[in-house]
Amino acid sequence: MATQAEMLAANLAHQLERLEAMRRSAARLMARDRLGRDFFARGMPVMMHTGPTSYYGPTIMDLLEAYARVCRPHLPPTEYYEKPEN
Image (cartoon, rainbow, N blue to C red; front, side):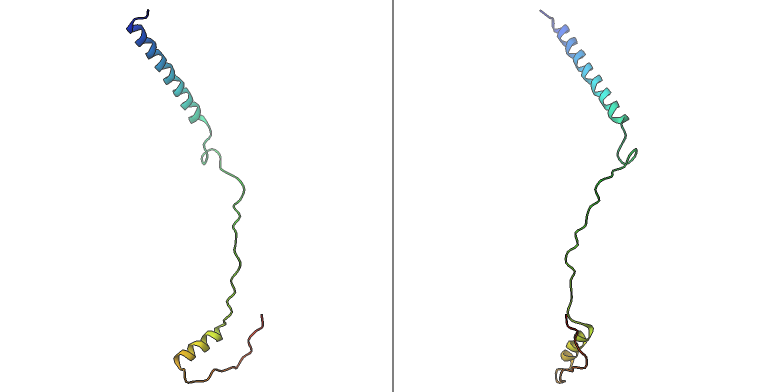
Protein backbone atom coordinates (compact mmCIF):
# COMPACT_ATOMS: atom_id res chain seq x y z
CA MET A 1 0.00 0.00 0.00
CA ALA A 2 1.32 3.42 -0.97
CA THR A 3 1.96 5.88 1.74
CA GLN A 4 0.49 9.36 1.77
CA ALA A 5 3.85 10.92 0.86
CA GLU A 6 4.17 8.66 -2.20
CA MET A 7 0.62 9.60 -3.30
CA LEU A 8 1.36 13.30 -2.90
CA ALA A 9 4.61 12.89 -4.85
CA ALA A 10 2.83 11.06 -7.66
CA ASN A 11 0.10 13.72 -7.77
CA LEU A 12 2.72 16.49 -7.88
CA ALA A 13 4.61 14.72 -10.67
CA HIS A 14 1.39 14.39 -12.66
CA GLN A 15 0.58 18.09 -12.23
CA LEU A 16 4.12 19.06 -13.27
CA GLU A 17 3.81 16.91 -16.42
CA ARG A 18 0.51 18.65 -17.28
CA LEU A 19 2.08 22.07 -16.68
CA GLU A 20 5.01 21.20 -18.94
CA ALA A 21 2.60 20.02 -21.66
CA MET A 22 0.67 23.29 -21.41
CA ARG A 23 3.90 25.30 -21.68
CA ARG A 24 4.96 23.36 -24.79
CA SER A 25 1.55 23.91 -26.36
CA ALA A 26 1.66 27.63 -25.56
CA ALA A 27 5.14 27.91 -27.05
CA ARG A 28 3.97 26.18 -30.27
CA LEU A 29 0.96 28.50 -30.51
CA MET A 30 3.02 31.62 -29.95
CA ALA A 31 5.55 30.54 -32.59
CA ARG A 32 2.87 30.30 -35.30
CA ASP A 33 2.24 33.04 -37.83
CA ARG A 34 -0.27 35.60 -36.63
CA LEU A 35 -3.14 37.04 -38.61
CA GLY A 36 -2.53 40.72 -39.25
CA ARG A 37 1.19 40.53 -38.48
CA ASP A 38 2.72 37.65 -40.45
CA PHE A 39 -0.10 37.11 -42.95
CA PHE A 40 -3.23 38.97 -43.88
CA ALA A 41 -6.80 37.86 -44.41
CA ARG A 42 -8.04 37.53 -47.95
CA GLY A 43 -11.33 36.22 -49.08
CA MET A 44 -14.43 36.83 -51.05
CA PRO A 45 -15.17 40.54 -51.36
CA VAL A 46 -18.36 41.62 -49.70
CA MET A 47 -20.90 42.40 -52.38
CA MET A 48 -22.95 45.44 -51.45
CA HIS A 49 -26.59 45.23 -52.39
CA THR A 50 -27.95 48.46 -53.75
CA GLY A 51 -31.66 48.81 -53.64
CA PRO A 52 -33.79 50.30 -56.35
CA THR A 53 -32.93 53.87 -57.16
CA SER A 54 -35.52 56.39 -56.14
CA TYR A 55 -37.15 58.67 -58.66
CA TYR A 56 -38.67 61.86 -57.45
CA GLY A 57 -41.31 63.17 -59.83
CA PRO A 58 -41.59 66.82 -58.84
CA THR A 59 -39.18 69.15 -60.55
CA ILE A 60 -37.84 72.40 -59.16
CA MET A 61 -40.55 74.24 -61.05
CA ASP A 62 -43.26 72.11 -59.45
CA LEU A 63 -41.84 72.91 -56.02
CA LEU A 64 -41.66 76.63 -56.77
CA GLU A 65 -45.27 76.65 -58.00
CA ALA A 66 -46.42 74.86 -54.85
CA TYR A 67 -44.53 77.34 -52.70
CA ALA A 68 -46.04 80.25 -54.62
CA ARG A 69 -49.55 78.82 -54.14
CA VAL A 70 -48.95 78.62 -50.39
CA CYS A 71 -47.55 82.13 -50.17
CA ARG A 72 -50.13 83.73 -52.48
CA PRO A 73 -53.24 81.56 -52.62
CA HIS A 74 -55.28 84.19 -54.52
CA LEU A 75 -53.11 83.86 -57.70
CA PRO A 76 -54.18 81.29 -60.34
CA PRO A 77 -51.73 78.44 -61.21
CA THR A 78 -49.52 79.07 -64.21
CA GLU A 79 -48.75 76.58 -66.95
CA TYR A 80 -45.78 78.08 -68.77
CA TYR A 81 -43.76 74.92 -69.43
CA GLU A 82 -44.42 71.40 -70.58
CA LYS A 83 -43.99 68.59 -68.09
CA PRO A 84 -41.81 65.72 -69.34
CA GLU A 85 -43.59 62.40 -69.88
CA ASN A 86 -42.10 59.42 -68.05
